[in-house]
Amino acid sequence: MALPAIRWFATAVILVCLHIHLSSAIYCDEDDCYDILGVTQSANASEIKKAYYKLSLKYHPDKNPDPDSRKLFVKVANAYEILKDDATREQYDYAIAHPEEVFYNTARYYKAYYGHKTDARAVLVGLLLVLSAFQYLNQWTRYTQAISMVKKSPAYKNRLRGMQLERSGGMTNKKKAIKPKDMKMEEELSKELELQIKGAEKPSLWELLAIRFLLLPYTIGKLLLWSICWFWRYKVKKAPYTWDDARYMTQRCLRISLDAWRNIDGSTRDDLIQRRLWEKPNMEKYMVEMRKESKRRR
Image 1 (tube, rainbow, N blue to C red):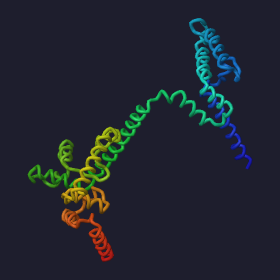
Image 2 (image 1 turned 180 degrees about the vertical axis):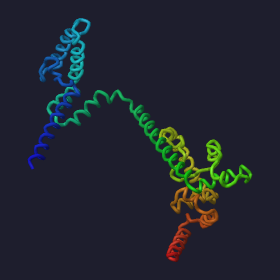
Image 3 (image 1 turned 90 degrees about the vertical axis):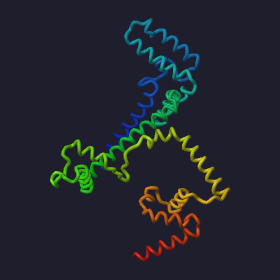
């Protein structure tokens, strides 16, 4: 029981020391800003300014040949930058009085000294570029892995063999038809096969976050124009739905994705569109039929 308690106490002491060290280091490193200028914490702005000018003349590299003068001059200038402004001096005094609030003090320091120097637009662009790079790399990895798995499947090999037989006029024997004659021929034939793999499509630059963000105004404008035209055509003029718009309404009523809709048989899709499911009575009738069909299959 004693050993865990000792470890906990030692860890707590280390963390407290680390907090105190970080709280002071973010301003004047290991030193005290007031001690560097040789003034007390209660010194006024005039006293701080006089102390700075006196020390800057003493340690200026042009007037002091000592090799360490440059480092001392930088420390003096840094301490003066912190203490000459009322806001940063107040933050520094708070950090001295509350060394345990290391994360809060660090955040205030970096916000005061670096926040105004960072353009939010540049940060946003950089973030979008990084996320887009990871997105493209992830999609490309998934795509290549899926293609590799498909090429090892019997179905792919059979299609490849069929294309080889078709190209050779059916004269190739079975032993030679199992594999292409060389890697170059296999690569040419494999490019002719359309591999549509759901969930692992070939990555497209148009799908990247950065491109979509750039095209966001165009996308919003296009959507707004489409909504206005839809409202005018079908709500104001009461025009009948076109086949494409009826397809969209049917897909929306069924709450299925475009890929799922495309996987439905063509005759079934035509039947669903002709049912006019966007009208409430027709949709209710269709749902009753689906429930009966589900019970019958059970």
